[in-house]
Figure 1 (cartoon, rainbow, N blue to C red):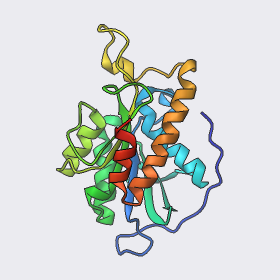
Figure 2 (figure 1 turned 60 degrees about the horizontal axis):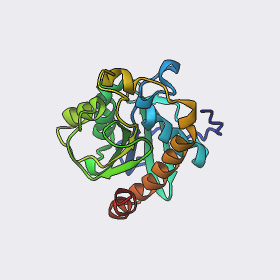
Figure 3 (figure 1 turned 30 degrees about the horizontal axis):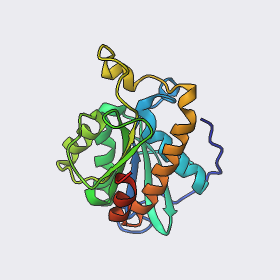
Figure 4 (figure 1 turned 30 degrees about the vertical axis):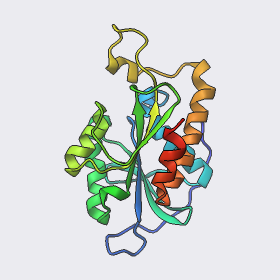
Length: 209
């Protein structure tokens, strides 16, 4: 998936409140071209689509992540794609939260979930990691599970002998492309509601389907 965007320069954020974000948006995935089109990188894909729509690039290296500090729908946001690899995502998220003093309730996590059907979405205000290693790391490092999250369904492994690890690191098939693009578009629309603090509306619109 190719995204062509114009980079908008921003001043470096600080913890004093000057040019500091009100919300953190973190898409989860693994860095590097090897993992670009894999199921585990749905979080990265959603963030990239948001960046395309808003005409910015997530490329400033900070907090063990590629980042961008942008105003989205009137809200100043730190957008993150951790470079730590999935299992250590909490190191990146906690570093940003600590620096900007952002509470978990204002830290939105987007990631894949094999426990829900392919291309479906689920929004939660908080909760356990659900077996997702990225969320497990974030909850452990943050010492709380109060992170709002958008889960993008990648479906279960096709048969019982297919290891979950191999499944989440497998690439999407060509015939899944249209449904995936639709799911990512819906995820970004839901994300905009969460950014504006309308999580109840997002849950009502997404979770009832």
